[in-house]
Length: 115
Length: 111
Image (cartoon, each protein chain N blue to C red):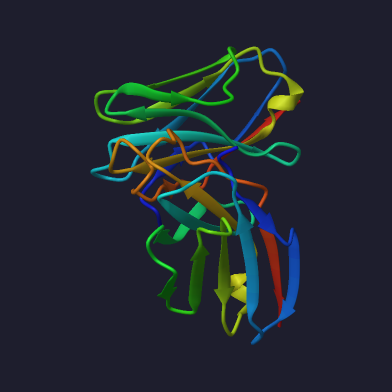
C-alpha cells in the first residue's frame, strides 16, 4: 500500500460531461503529480503541485484543470469529456518539491470510461 | 527528450530464469529511477541509482548505469510469476521539472 488514495476507482460517464477525480497524498508528502495512462499514449505527465502551488505542467488539455487544497489533497477536473479521455488517471505524491531525488508514490488510479 | 526508452518492449521467460531489461536516454542525468507497474495498478518505485554509481542492488534486483553510453540495465534474478509486470525507467537531472516515462518493458514470467 503506497499510502496514496484515489477516488473513485471507476467512473463511467457520457461525452460532454464533467467529472472530478480526487487524490489524498501520503501523509507528510507535499507534492502531488497527476498522470494519464492510455493504451495509445502511454503514461503522460499532466501537472504537478507542491504545497498548494502549481510547479509544472505537462500535456494537460485546456478542458482539464487541477488544484491542491490547504490540506494537501488534490482534485483533477475533466470537462467537456470526449471518448478519447477514457484512460487511467494516476495521482502520485512525494515529499519534496522535485521528483529529482524523491521517488514518487502512486495511487492505484481512477479508471475513467467515457461513453 | 527527457524520457528513457526501454528495451525490449516485451520479454517472456520461465520462473527461475533471469530477466534483463535495458534503458537508454539522450541527455545528461544526475540519477535514474526504475519503477514497476502490475497490470491496472499504480507504479511502484524499485530503485534509484545516482550518476556516480555504477551498480546497485536491492534484493533480487541489480541495476547498472553507464553514463558514457547513456544506458542502464535492470536485472531480476530468479524470476517469479509475481514479477510479471511492466518496468519503466526514468532518467532525472536537477533541470527536469517532472518525471516522465517511456512505454516500458512488459515482462511475463510463466510458472
